[in-house]
Amino acid sequence: MISDDFETVALASIMINDTVEVGKTDLKGFFQVDIPASMKKIIFRSVAIEPATIELVDKCDEVEVVMMLSGTYDFMTLKKVDRHRKKKFKRLPELHKEAFAKGIFKTDKACYTQQFTPHYKKK
Image 1 (cartoon, rainbow, N blue to C red):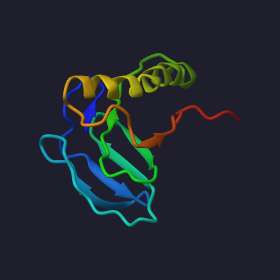
Image 2: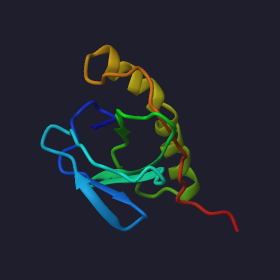
Image 3: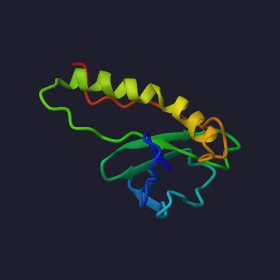
Image 4: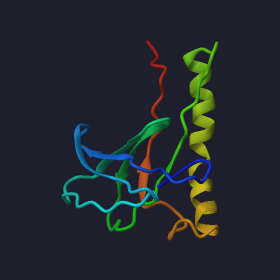
């Protein structure tokens, strides 16, 4: 597991069912957890990094995640903050490929899907 600036994410919590912690990444960002086959949704959380919720696809043995660093957005509306965040989010697949090219990841694309979670909710 790495951040969007290619630094390892150490001691990130790995959770299922929104509240059950099943493990943590080690100091080099690696992890190994056993998850029930029926469980497809995994959440990764760490300090100063936005939570990443992924949904596994079939035959996914190697999960390599790029997480977005969380930022401070002073004097901006939530709508504008979400535009900045979404722009960063859209780059995650490209960063995954770049991590593969640099030898950080073993696969060139993720074996999971991930949806953008906005802060701003329309009324």
